[in-house]
Length: 302
Ligand SMILES: O=C(O)CCC(=O)C(=O)O
Image (cartoon, rainbow, N blue to C red; front, side):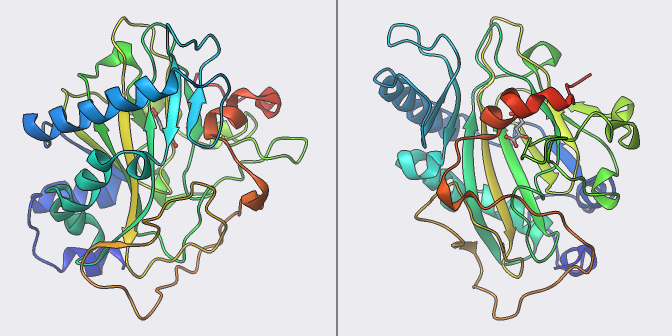
């Protein structure tokens, strides 16, 4: 779907202005979209996952642990594919009013790609360096977005998501380090071509949604506050956007339509797209790459 195709459908939830903002800037914040009942159900799911993580001693396919994680004092960076780990999350992704809102930005048929729960634990939760999602999971067209749900209030002190306006219509950067290995963020040498001084930080109360196009440059600072910043992320696309590289975040819901019918025709965007390495042999998370050896290539938030 092109933005014009999508905008030609009558909106269900968002105003026409909000949709145009999304297509112009490459992201929007929708405050207080998720109600208290859904938040309570999801928070119970988060609590169950944290409980399970107490048995973990090293990062793996599901739990990505912060240094210092113990059974007594769990500290998580991420849970990969929460939609597969607890029914509360897939219920939210597939059966809540979220689907109606996504139709306003992706068109009538909306498909699920992957899910993540980024914790940004209180007092130190890790930064996410400037990056675009497209080089992690390129699709045949750009009708792909990540929707984040702030499960707690998120102000500047909690490390909100920052997005660079208009970056989705500019260059898609190579996310490899100077050594040729995957780094997972935009390298220092390339950052001057990104207007990061123009970044807008999306702060909002619990229940607010962040929605960014997969080409938009985004990142977030560490959480130095006393309040954790769990952010539930779902990657969704128009049904006619097809991924063409290996998806390392395994999910039983891969490419399922949460609204509308599967597409019989793929739509292709002619712009070139850098591709990730072949992760069929294993992958942990963006944090492992960004904070690992390849992180020597620079690219810190500021
Ligand atoms: O947790 C965040 O602040 C950003 C998350 C993100 O961009 C990602 O996980 O790709």
